Image 1 (spheres, rainbow, N blue to C red):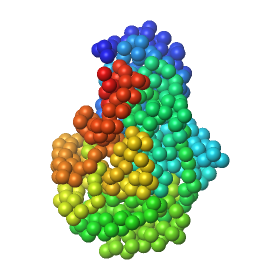
Image 2: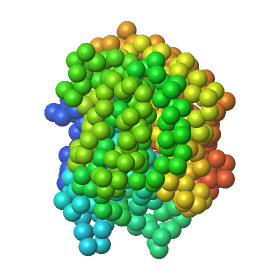
Image 3: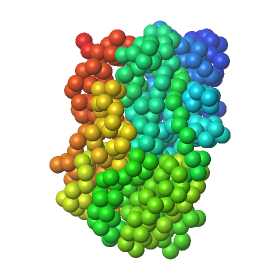
Image 4: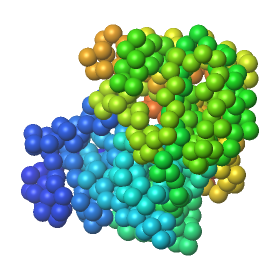
Length: 470
């Protein structure tokens, strides 16, 4: 594609603004700095324009404007975006973050969700009907980003990944065409959207299948001292091997955050936590989780009946907007003793008390979907790990170098066990080879062919990019 233009004259901006129902922001405008800021405070980019879209018509207008004037496009949904591709320098950000409406059909058990919504928006509407679908483990995660990459969450072992619950998607293509993708319409595109990321266009709304969940679930973490990590992981390996689909678990290695539910003497203490959510009757969950709660001598047991939506947002305050996040990830096999030793040797060697790693247990319904059914390709992996270096902006000088080095060392130590990678956990510096690793050559080639059909000029390249065939 031609070299993008970076200069935009006043008359052109005014004409564009007049066509949009939403706002168009430039440097110096009130709200510009807030609008260019995303969750990861490491990202500091200054677009020439930010088009704050109010609906699908605005998205079409913005895409056409950018194409006709040869401006680079970044697409912002909910705004987590650790890799920083949701904003750009000099180009145009097509910002969907004001498009957060959710419509629930309780009889059909479906929800239509706009492309800028957060999972808290979805959970708020669906809980009124005792329904939910698989969302992220942090409620301020954006629906679009999570869905388009696959969708790991508490309910995945029972109800599948987020993409397994996607029924249709409305999308604006690179040439400004509005299309609906489903099993019956643009089925090739629908396949690609379920794991292929933002490569094919801008999704303005999603339609999801919903399931009865809760509204009360048995959920929460159990903490053990960091010194007990080896014993905790050996127990965990056996505990989850035959776990029912209703049980979702995430192991966290880090410190106990200074939350009101934790005694003050435990604040910032290094610990391993097994966080659980039982998506079934509470009384059944009590029996299933009893061995976990009785293992060893826990520092803290916070498992209790609670609203599903409360558990969904339970860790929100430990991953705040504006902090700096640097992460790496890989899929992993079952936890052998040698692999457990890697965790013991590396998981607690970070210097920042805010840094952590999380180990997801997959399987269940995730693994029972055919690997070719969607573009998400990690269905055979038992686990996925996300290694996350974290520090506040005022701690950059103290921690930036140490935490990025720790993340890389930990990933390097896992090299003998790596089985792939979850595309949503790729960082800005992971590069093309890791994108190919996320999909494997067969799926990547098919995605590249579909990319060539819907975006042959690679207009949407600020993402974990799949280059179009030819």
